[in-house]
Amino acid sequence: MRLQIRQCLNSTCRFRFPWNENDLPSLDCPRCGAAIQVISERVLPVEQAPIPPAPLPTLPFVAALLDNVRSTFNVGSIFRCADGAGIAHLFLCGITPTPDHPKVAKTALGAEQTVPWSYHTNAVALACDLQIQHHQLWVLEELPNAASLFASHQPATADPIVLVLGNEVAGVDPGLVELADRIVALPMYGAKRSLNVAIAFGIAAYTLCFNAHTSD
Image (cartoon, rainbow, N blue to C red; front, side, top):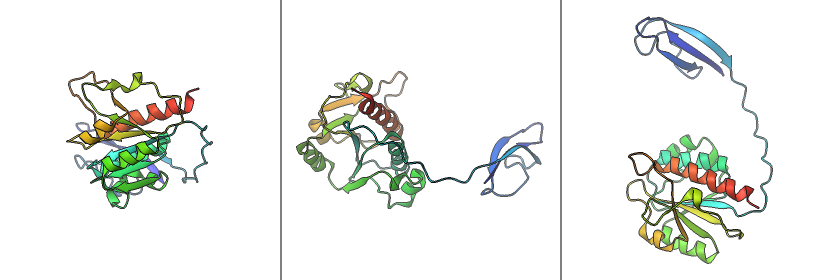
């Protein structure tokens, strides 16, 4: 695929933007309509089959439970990040859209085919079953009794960790909070008290997976 960097020739505009073969072929500035010039051009290599990653050591794996996450775009982003971080499984609960939804697949960019997932109608019932199977529930929520995720040491046992994330507005179901083995949060130093759920997941997923795969 050809990729160009283009720039408007109008001295009062000088809009600079990328263009590829899938875009409209116009040579006019999309902002002011003046002529444009091609600043640089390169050809992207044809995507090769990915090299299988080296097997991870046998250490506690990390999964995630999405409790009524509403946005298809958030779920797609979570899938993509889960693939990169090495999340073992995504439990999709309640109104959380599944990869059957085209907007999830569009944002996940194929990660929905590489990350194992399952759908469950009731997150609290699922959480009870997971604890019976010796999974630890780590709820990611900004609560008064939450500990910093970065100060939370993972146990040396082989028990899997399930990171729990909640609805964009309502947060994590109180029933899941009551079941939690740990409640953790990301430190917030600005005026806002929370992050977008997909961004928060990305930070937490990489933190937990990195610690799990590098701990003694």
